Image (cartoon, rainbow, N blue to C red):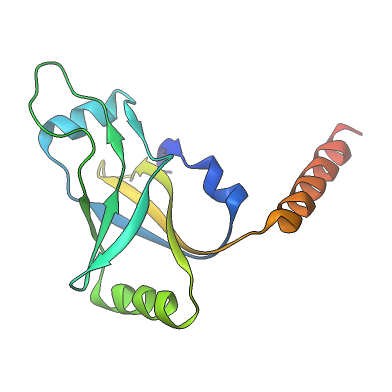
Length: 142
């Protein structure tokens, strides 16, 4: 069972998640140490595609002790070529966005990021989502 470090709760509310992918992430040593202490945030992150590579931008990792390095730099995501092509195609053809949803440790101890292709929700969809969520909460109470 993977250990969840942080979730992007806003992504679940603002977007309708379609396809989910688990990817590795290229990190420096001090970043992994800081993440192990729980000092990472993916709330304001977004994913871009540059030269057939996927990058996570805006992920904040607090500095570990006296380490040097940028706290908010673009970090490369590690996906297979087939997955990158599929994501790229869905972004172009269907007009979907790519959102980082969960930052976690895998069973083998590596830092992984769950990304999803997503379709944005408008205001009416958000209201319906809130109604369904509240109805589920009420049913669990009784």
